[in-house]
Length: 327
View 1 (cartoon, helix red, strand yellow):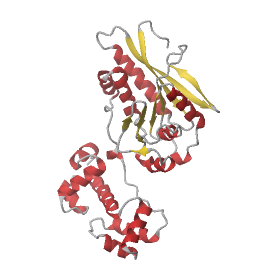
View 2 (cartoon, rainbow, N blue to C red):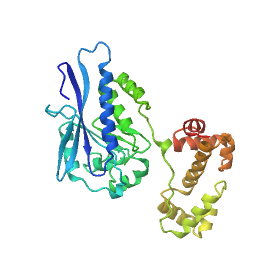
View 3 (cartoon, rainbow, N blue to C red):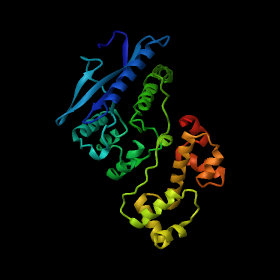
View 4 (tube, rainbow, N blue to C red):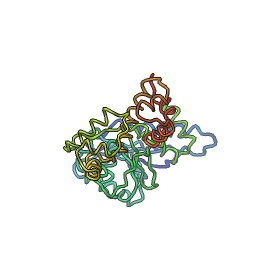
């Protein structure tokens, strides 16, 4: 594609292709920005055609080179660079010094950097999100925090926009990041028209409603594991710390310390997550009244159940059932 005489390119968005990245995000973002540019052309009273230029950049040995360009032949004027999701888990992702150096160099020139899902690990290698809030897929949050302890991981957010750096959460959150950029570059009207045409939601604010509680059982602490198994089997119980510590055969303070070390949560928090996990299943798969579900997972006070459910998922139980219920 060549630049049209009356065309004003408002941005060049460079998409990074790294080993094992999600190519669906690369091509999906390319299509999204192309469609947004087409909708921008339909706006009335536009003296100049506003569009977004998209280029693909691939890691090749120790370099990053352009392998496709929607406006081939024009000098590059990159304004945004995005690292897409990975198709493999972060533990298996290789270090990418060439990509991080490329992104750091662009940032120093005033380019806004972005990442989606595990692309945050590529971005974090630059050091540019140290001491900043950044998001990634909720399942990768602990790994990101462990590998890059200076990053303030905030996975409750679907998109975090710091102006010069943007991060998005889940593996399909490239739609959220893409639409956020369309709104910034072409306006909210074009963004909404693009979302309607693609039959997708406007940018989502949170990912808490999509996250899952994944308890840790492989920590090697047999006494704590025994208590965990009991808690999962008796979710409706109201045993306190003294009773749970006695089940582990440990002093209360020792139990509290070892439980938090093994599971990453205090016993009361752990029990809340188990209860809400079971409540979510019931809301998704049954038509049982919400108060009855609350009682079945150990809450005698429906108001307390709703408050805890909202704290963990970001939604009230009725809204959660409306969004995710299949019964």
